[in-house]
Image (cartoon, rainbow, N blue to C red; front, side, top):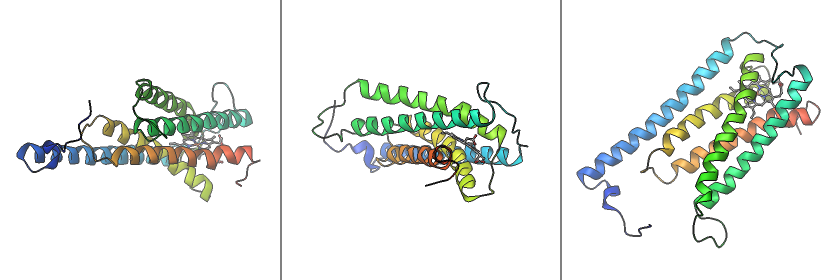
Length: 199
Ligand code: HEM
């Protein structure tokens, strides 16, 4: 059920309210710190790992592995766009939308899980085969976006469990995730599809 009256528990004007506001701040800081820790751990691992260019992906190596990764990345981007549509529906922002059908939050969770699971084999191949490389702008942007994606994912999972977040927190975390998926796709999959160059 929805309530339109302002909730004094959210105002921070009472003892309980300020305690809750404090807890929300702790949750936001924790999400940011955990996200930063995951980013840093992946980045440092990728920088210090010795690349293994013979690494396979589901039995594919060389160009076949690159093609498979580009296709998987395209599927991941498509799922990201589905997530965006579902998020818009969750916030009741579709034209003439009055309510949120029950299937919407469930689908958002399911698609998010599938999206994340699909990134894992691709990213493991990236990290083990190449590590984090900073040699050219495209590859550096891709490597940093890859580490950022996992940091942002962890931050979003921490945030989604809190009920009293400022309204901007989840859209920001979700928007950053989708942006990093788009950057990953552009800097590697599109590069491959466009004959090893960027449009
Ligand atoms: C920690 C995360 C990641 C790191 C450090 C990373 C790093 C890299 C590097 C260094 C390359 C080689 C680029 C080149 O030489 O041209 C690469 C290629 C690629 N990456 Fe990633 N990546 C990560 C995550 C991801 C994710 C999540 C996706 C998909 C959504 C992805 C998709 C691709 C694709 C399609 C290629 C081109 C195929 C290939 O060269 O094997 N990467 N990655």
